[in-house]
Image (tube, rainbow, N blue to C red; front, side, top):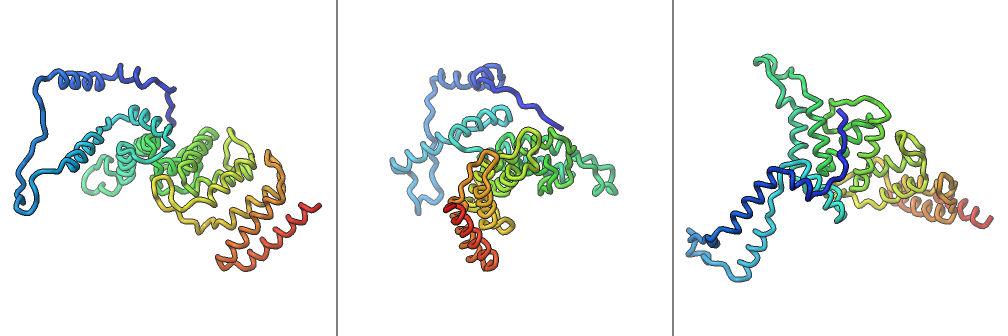
Length: 308
């Protein structure tokens, strides 16, 4: 089920070898050499009595600008990945890929048995799902930058419950765990709050990081802080609830790291006290009085450690 990622290539070299691109260049050349002048075709409106049948210069300019922006995108994953690299330069990791969404839907169709061979009417509900093909399409969707696919693959490779392809399972190996953490990091960078919390806990405790990463409290505080400041929407505008991991709990975990110090993080009781105070205020607002009192007390202890 594992796929290999090809090394970076030159977009120009790739297009030179692509027969589709060669055909496209021929069509463009024929169009440029044609002596026929093409203009915009106007049609009389059946509602001409109610509306003008012509556009103002401003409306015509706006229409031409809109038409100019309607650039077609090839249905090729390799070219889509190249386009995704350009989006990364502009700071957009996910979203905007129609081809990726198509691959995601194909994976769901496989999950629902839409492509499974049916052996008579009595076998309509007993098809065997082609999980290899389903995961293949899910991986293509992730490569195209579909956040839902990235999160699903991250949780699948890390042996966690996942909403997409619930019945699909992969072997619990070190390689798959490392791949899962890679996908989880991609999701976190794209704004998925649950992925941020997974990374924060992983770098905090070392659990679930695989063999390529280790405990790093600098990274842990970074992801705790990112998760706290998350507005509730990821890069694709999807809402991510915060009830399971409220901000005050995450702030308290971050404060604990600053209070102890270690694993690359410099001890900072002052920062710890500030975070405990903020956590206490949020807990109080959430009607968690006992927890708020606990945080206030720990904050005072941190202030005392500063004086020492």
